[in-house]
Image (cartoon, rainbow, N blue to C red; front, side, top):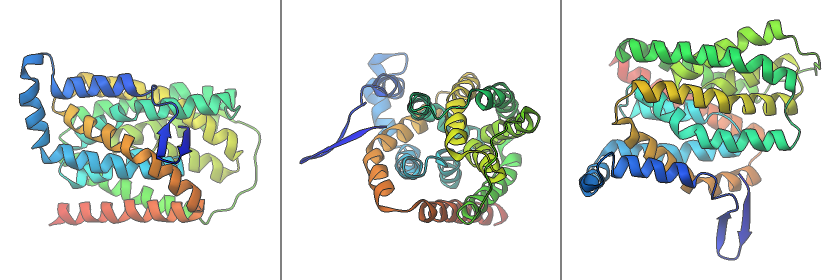
Length: 294
């Protein structure tokens, strides 16, 4: 997302891009299928702790993702699980809210020439297949049974993000689809079941193996948009209307947080941000495990 700075503060240059989605989300949240019940639904949302929790989560997650370029999903899901959302609701709401952010990111990388066509195509279909499998599992198995495994996964992802800050690699330019396809299926699966992880699993694995960071990040981000749309569509058809309260909170919080993300990017080094986000996810996951054990 692009910003300009004036004497009165930050202005969204491309603010019109997410506006239709935000209007739709607010309409679904506040008015639903019957406009006459709008005031009642507004009051329900304003007095719903989950809405305000989601708003705060969206703010924090967007600051991290805007500054780091990854970890929106795992940050949002970790916090939503901590405030009591079910695994399916947390992942579904995160993916629904993430559609427009991944769209902006993917198109930007494409226009800047950061997308490797061969790598993108190797990631696209396998990633979608893995995501659909994960969405199906998450919505057909009791969330209480999955929550410990998802929490452990998020804990490992937090530690992995921290380790990325201290890793070195040699550059590899050849794309081997046989190695990329299984990684994409795994990344899509854990992204859907854990509410995030496509970037940490796929990007960090490819870059850690020595692939060009610029085209890897660009290709993974562009593929993520299609992955997110498909995953969100799957959750949309399987979740009840209550998920819109969480989605609206994530989107509104994310919009307010965007300028702070740009500020963080300017003033913090990448290594510092990696350590911060990894530590944050790790601590939240440990808290979730403590609650489960208790």
